[in-house]
Length: 68
Image 1 (tube, helix red, strand yellow):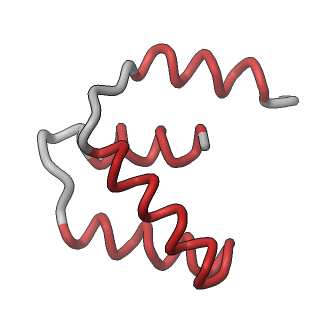
Image 2 (cartoon, one colour):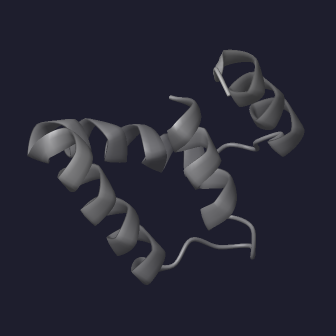
């Protein structure tokens, strides 16, 4: 989930999420999670793109749960 939140932050960094950014993310998700997993992740991402996201909080959360 944190990965999707971070992707949403990056996509929204310039003020809007472009079609080309979405295509790159979709290819990554399909390659790593399969078609069904990608569809589920894209639905979550769609919701995340419509919400305000605190980048600092996301970064701290990722840092807490990563081993390295």
